[in-house]
Length: 346
Image (cartoon, rainbow, N blue to C red; front, top):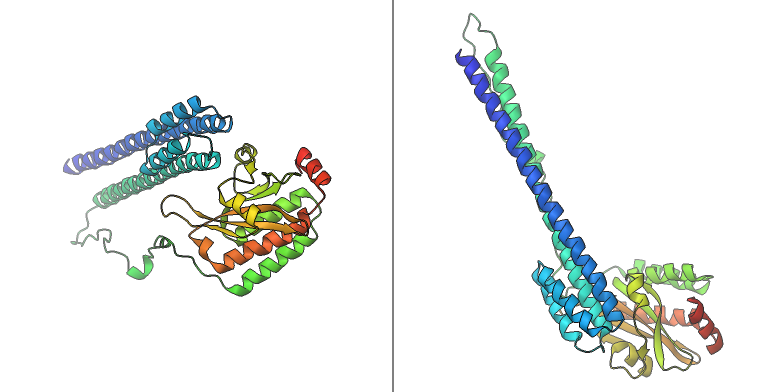
């Protein structure tokens, strides 16, 4: 009788553990779904804001950024939107406004990803606990069900010893680089990759192949984004021709840069000198802008957004200059042919 009551009590414990785990997982899944819904809503407003900025609708921009600030759940996103709101007062820094809005979107997406990962980890721990309770209940029931023997026997309970440390391998999270630290790479592999890239640029045959080589150049410089700006036939404006690392619709909406503009790209184009934009820790990456020089003068620039403070590295600056010099041989053309390429998007 006592054994049967104990069996029922153990079964009740196991059932309670299963029901509690099911309720917890259901609640956590609803929490994840809510976070993802909020992220999608935030992304929709980001697209609306981007459209308003590129179409110079100041009233819609203010309202959209205000909506994003009320929907933001992270300090990083709110800080980026504050900067976007300040820069949107006038439309002289459209690219900067778009960058800050995109940074807010990435911050919200990262926060949603972290929330989901943490919740999934907790769910796994709860399921492991329920499994442990279930195995314990089964073990106790099996032991109690054994028939009594004529001689006293020593019941052996399941071992509760902790496994040896050699069998418990804890993998540490990868170390986060210190702000401003630029990891050095061996010169040999970098030079080999650069020489191979120059060779491929010398025999490039179509636009799609050129886009792939631009992407390889960005990876070689550890750039999160790279844009090739080409001058118009009058030499008064710079237009985005090729890009890597940015959304195509965002690049397509970038306005032309005037030759007289007060920014690094226009300065590099006017002075034919490499320009460095230092990173602001916690706010924005640095950048390198290299002029594309041909026998007819400067025909454009490449602007690369560099990760981890690498814009101050002489090797990265040299790679940017080498890539720009090689690109000049590919892009050098007559004004009439250049106008035809711009008109056809090639």
